[in-house]
Length: 223
View: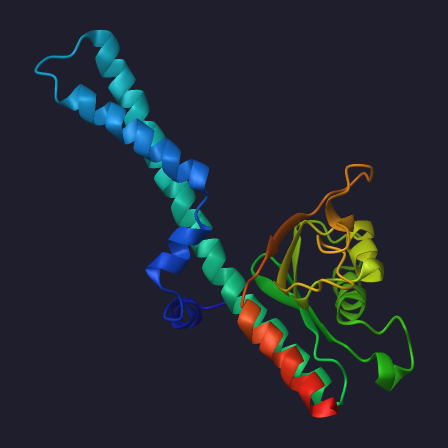
């Protein structure tokens, strides 16, 4: 993904959106540390112990700021790659399939794409995630998709969530949730069950409105 493409998507995101993505506890910690730094800096003279403490606090703030910046950059990338998943979902809609799309990313490169083809292929297995997982495994010549991120426009079902865990996918980013059948937190959360030997990092709500509107428009046509 080029810097130009990232900057293009940044225009969609207001500063308030970014701040809302920042963890509340991180902001609270920074506020507390900043107050402590200010109290020390207001003193006319610091002891050796206070100077060391001030230095530690300043380094801590720098670390937290770097963490926040990294989270913001990741958010921008999530926005970008979910757009690619939405493009796949639109391919499904052209086939009169429920518009669900998926891409898998490794080392900031899309290694596979998939979209719903269940009716077209006459196969229960032709879900967007299963298709993308199969292609990614072929690309890497390995069933393990460690260090990969899967982006999908609709919360995975039980089959796809199970496949994600089996494939050892590190991270999943979901657009719209599925209250009736989703297995990444709605009906249950297969992705993060402690009983399994692999748990997935989960992010939800990325381009939520776009993903949801695509589904609503599709089902509206069927009525």
